[in-house]
Image (cartoon, rainbow, N blue to C red; front, side, top):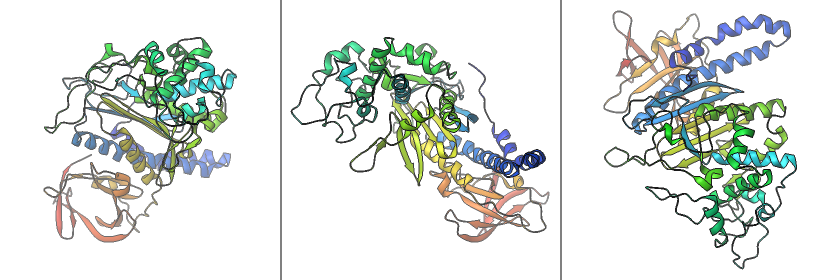
Length: 501
């Protein structure tokens, strides 16, 4: 396995404290080129990202431990490069092999994005049309008639999950312990006996069967096996060497994380048998690492920013990510293969994955040139973790910096570390944050919304600024006779310092 490109906590901390020097060093050249403001903006973005990573690293580690998640990996893309990636926990059954950002996981439904890109490559080539019935390309893919009036099931409705198809092929492949996925021939044999759940274009119904048919369409029009096409036309050009349209079971416990089931009452998890998605591969059969998913996301951000064609035209990718279908209740929106998310007024695209023993999420924020890839080997919600992580990054990006107190230069690093409020709560962490400090319970849900900011007043005193921005009381850091920080004091009560970052 290749060396993991990890921005360690120490490096992230250094990154958080370097931008002012870096910006000053670049400043002269920027002035010469008339780009001083751009250099300042880049420095502030770099500083904000560094401070956010420090807290994100702590938060993910603590959250993983409290949730008893065996292995979790994350990668953060800023622009068209991975700026931070890391693994937590262990990936083998004995708990000895550390997870990294190159650890391989089943990414399940993120597979649909590769299938959608493959189809749209053929759309650009003119071999397929979005509003053509699927039976034009796959005559065998006709569902049983059910007597209801319906418009045709088109390729567009398959990509947007609005075709009214059954969610699955007529096989019990999500049933353990063996997960008997069907072959392509078995899917073909039974599809004519399956009736639509709804008339086409009436409502949203997520369908693995639908995206499987999209993959089969790619194979039909290119006259190539689906796996060969995707590997040569998408994965190889993007350098995604750890991504496959299969699960490499020969690497289980080595490079591929062992999958685990839901948490049991005694705090343990049952192991999950490896599976082969077979005919459902275009919808759910891929494996990948977060570093590779980050490469996939970086390609998208680069394409959108430069508009230089690479695998697809930028206009095609924008069309894929644009909302193409909105459910009647206005709660679900979908592009061409891409899910559309709206969180606190911020718009994202991407996809999640949930297969036996694994969860994953790719979250892309084109407006802020940012992406997060997250994967783990349990059944907890990867989407929740990815969105909470994005909220933390957004909180730092949008934070208004505090001015230093007059006449005093403060080393904020001396206050950072873990503080122990037992028995009242889990340990809290204090980190540098936009000219002051941020304090939060280390495993706090929704960390971006719930952190408390500390505004420096000087002489070890900080004003508490609540999450909604209200300035409250003043708290102090307490030193021993040698000058070391030993506690923080608030309302006359003391919370001991326990350990550094």
